[in-house]
Length: 515
Picture 1: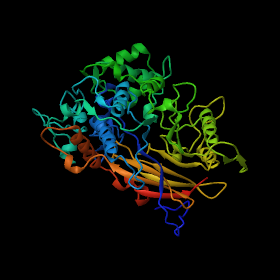
Picture 2: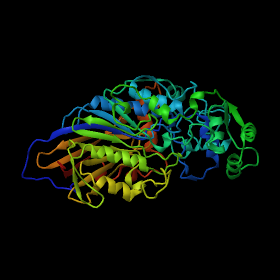
Picture 3: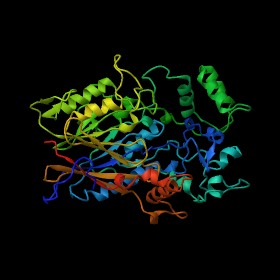
Picture 4: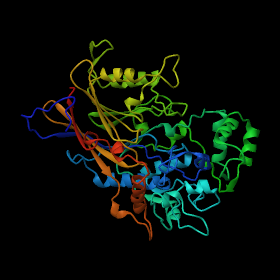
């Protein structure tokens, strides 16, 4: 139990009443791992730290992201109830980086897991990429884990010889086989992260670099090294100053292997992101959003007394910098006023209205701690909100009790004290589904009956170690378990940093009831 913001009245021992229960998952990074636009050839030029690429772009579990997301949704279906309140789950909410390279193939696979049915993020079928034993320079081959047994005179890679990663016969065929997804038993809501934001304009060219990568994405060439005598710095300089003809010639000059092409590997637009969501109650369209369906921020009902607000903090340019622009901030304040019979103005003066009070839970991709600078796009000359401005806005509305997010791939729980009265709100950051520990949370909002609320957050594992198979017929469940084992043994991983302290894991967070 954490009482940083408020203490329970220990003389009262009433039964807690469940107000809302939902699953929180984030940063699934559904990946079309063989997409030529990933520029996997560059991994051979990166420096290594204890055998792991400093870029972090390659993960041995890259091919298993669909399996992990499906296993997570399946596990939440199985759990069904909050462990403390015994209230059935009202919904599932995922807070961005649903895809890894904003490819349409990745988006459709991710949404398919929630809908149910046959799902794959590999649009060309059989795997053709750097993890097989196809043509590749030795430096590239050594830096990538190859799950299949070695053939001919090919030496084992460094992941096997230095770090003890296993040989798993049949892995590539099993990993790229479509998964039959159970689908979510509950309404589900999706947010946008920086990996879901392509930074491409609705029409025209984004940049020479983006055009170069997009041409590779949908093509039939998988580059395996830079042209003779060229280093990465010169390569990017040529790319960034290229026209269409020069880009085509540069691609043609790169030693490559022939692969099957797919137009599904192109970047998706915001409008396509919204269109991929279903039209029933379990999606953004059930709530209140801006007039344009291509703006992925909205409200939704978690339960009768609890409003969910999904923000879009992804920067329009596709960078990792979070952005909450003035237009969205104005919209957010309208939503908060609509469910607050009492709130404060910027000077701390109390305002009242006839609004019906509801508790508010915010969702976004980025945590508050990442709002350090006023960077990103502007709105009519008004800069986006920095950290202090975001916190200042939320602190004026006591009905905001919780903010959930991801992005950092770490478990963290942070209290934020109210500015104008006792109380405040809690912020819960959940780790990713692609890196260790690959956990989700069940979050319960409860009335303690003593003038306080409890927010109970319980971590959920998608698999058990007993499910891991190194040989024999793989199943989607065994592959999900293997993904966690591969992630857990990543060279240089600081396990404690990822899972956080005791107060960041299974927690019961106390706060004052605002009405």
